[in-house]
Image (cartoon, rainbow, N blue to C red; front, side, top):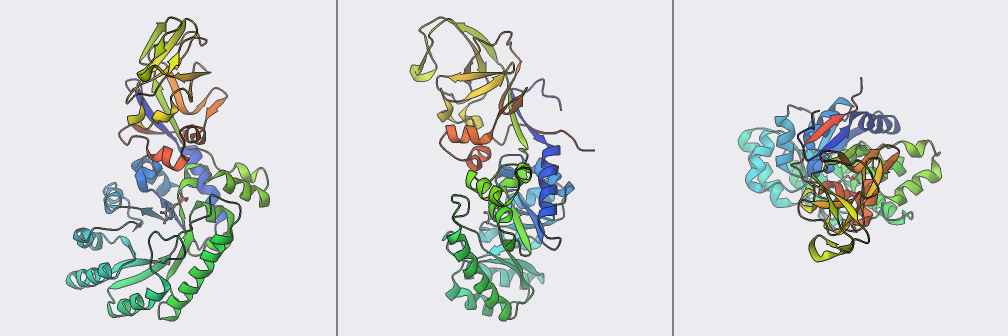
Length: 388
Ligand SMILES: *Cc1c(COP(=O)(O)O)cnc(C)c1O
């Protein structure tokens, strides 16, 4: 890793990732497929880097949102199964069949097209039915289920490999009544599918929070997103987990991502001057500022202006004024010796101090899921802390 000539970069800890995945390997049953959800540039961590680590540490398959993401994984040379969870534009269905991806199925028109394409190519295509259990986002209702099953019976090249659902309200609460009602509907529909002549389908429902909190949702596969990156789905998930697990077990997840930037400029500002666009901060004394070459275009939210801090010279340097498109100013008046090229930590550890994604997400009025996925894709990612 040579970052000497970089303004900003992301470090991905192999050690942390390995620990997170190992925890889940031991936590879920052997028969359950561990699928790494790597949509949205692997939650901003870098698709290429995370797929490499997921493959190395025992993820058995991948879940993505788009066919482009799936093709990218293939181009990197990985052969493991990939489930495309988002809609594939119909013009790209032939390519999806050709590439042998697993496809989500939630509408009849797509099923017809897949029937035709698979016949033309004389090639099977595997589909996973998405079942509507109360999230009302994507999925088929129980009343429609038989129509799908009848059609599937008539299109033998379209292979019903699995059926799944997704919980609506599992992270935002410690009351899991709604999740359990979804689970009940799910089980009923799965029963119906098995009875109608598809006894061997893979049944899956668990995202990170379900995988952590409810072993009975592990079924045949878990779709592990945020937690593989060492982030708890939510404080509520952590609290719920800790009510049944020890304090040590509560420390199982290690954050994988750090974000750094080099000081681009250092300057003195007299007292009573206002800083940046809109003059939202006024100095109260002779002040020394470091200008960092990152801003909201990089994913460092504009909302962090006058709120966040970075770690610089092992101290906290507060952001002064508004965050600009590609720059942000931090106060280093009381941090001696800061110079151009010094390393500032935006997310992660410096000395004994840590800035978590959660802190920045909260300060900018959102959640960690959004914060990490919005870190600009073009910022270079490096794998560090290699495991032997
Ligand atoms: C994103 C996603 C997941 C992963 O959720 P996490 O909370 O990040 O583990 C699982 N299933 C589906 C359908 C998803 O869209």
